[in-house]
Image 1 (cartoon, helix red, strand yellow):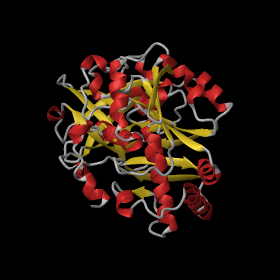
Image 2 (cartoon, rainbow, N blue to C red):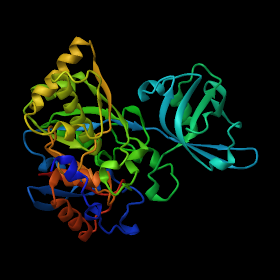
Image 3 (tube, rainbow, N blue to C red):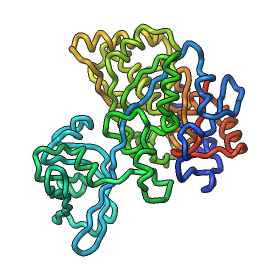
Image 4 (cartoon, rainbow, N blue to C red):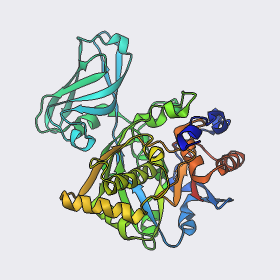
Length: 406
């Protein structure tokens, strides 16, 4: 039986646990680094606080952070009838599908969106909002570009203003649906990592929410730190509904990795500790792109959902070999950064090629992220979660943290 046949028989009920409403952290702690930290190392578990995390990092390890920045992706328009229409930005479609470029577009753009109260917004109607800004008065109009596909065109009447500033004017923080509350002013800075840089995520890489500038500065004295960008999409919250997990529709997310990070991974023997599952997905996906380059299978960075399992985990190049192939590719193409996207689905049976340790929060039952954790530490995922529940840990986006060292 091959890996995909085994995966098709995964019983999702084995990745269920009882998560009561009161265990979900609805609000952040007053101080980022005061969260509890569960340290799992080769089967043993310790309970600490996040401000002590440096003490538990392997000596010869480096940290990789996802520096994506959450945009206020929930945009509201009020119709003359009084109907409140919520537009949730998902991904750009025109004039460019690349998030980084789409945020800088001026005058008009088209995004794929979710629409709340959609039945009250007919296909021919247009919505308007007005803002007083340093540029003067701005009118923003929203119309359907494609009603069936929920493609919405935004237009604004000031050529000096990029779309990222329009979103900042109009939008609110896109809190996860399971928080069941409206965003507050406190959420603007707190649902954002202190090192966020590149606008485009519609959900935070929440493993990084515990870090402070002081902790980062302290870690950097003894552990190299590198960054990448994966723009987290709303699909990260999508539950697995298919009986056969292989049929789950994995969301596609955009990745950007600077050449300096690729060069580091091509030459370093350091253990790699990723901050968050998004960093895991990015690095493991980049590895497989290196494999494709070595095998002359592709020269475009796009990793399909099941490619690693179809390829198999035998006779693979080393981490250094794969990233060196990417380095050579970038040099030949005169690229300063690697851009691509991934649908990679990591579940039990996956063999990690880059990541040695993981800093992460506690995830929803029967989710793709629980499957990733189970792939990383095996059946001990259940022991970790049982222990966290027993010790009163706070769960999900604003919850407590763990350091997993298999």
